[in-house]
Amino acid sequence: MNPIEVTKGEFLISTDRNKLNLELIHTFLATEAGWCNDIPFKTVKYSIANSLNFGIYKNDEQVGFARIISDYATIAYLGDVFVLDVYRGFGLSSWLMEVITNHPNLQGLRRWILLTDTAPWLYKKFGFTAVRHPEYYMEKHDPGVYKEEI
Image 1 (cartoon, rainbow, N blue to C red):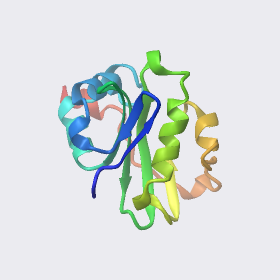
Image 2 (tube, rainbow, N blue to C red):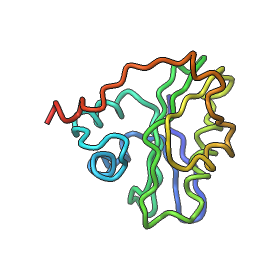
Image 3 (spheres, rainbow, N blue to C red):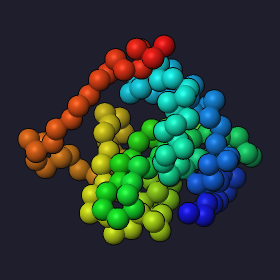
């Protein structure tokens, strides 16, 4: 899949994996995100290698990130969405979601999945809703898995 790049003013969103600042992504996820504290660098690197990644940049400096896990036919999981604090309030999150949901390889999917307890107002603008039948959903969750790898 060829990388896609979209610009808006001084900002760029790119799916080019080679542009990603893995150290920045890891630091944010491991120390600030809250949903994956202490995640090892090798786990972040491996997750990125197996995802469709969206980086937000200003003057070649990465300022945001999101990734999609998908079969590109029926389902997509949206995860690890963030914009650095100093760049919040510029509409970058909404723009990022717009670019993600309009990506040509993510059209016609039956289901999108997102697990979040932050910014529900953002995701609702793009059609995300609470799970209609939570009793149908199951999970196998190990919140201590990253602490075991340290």
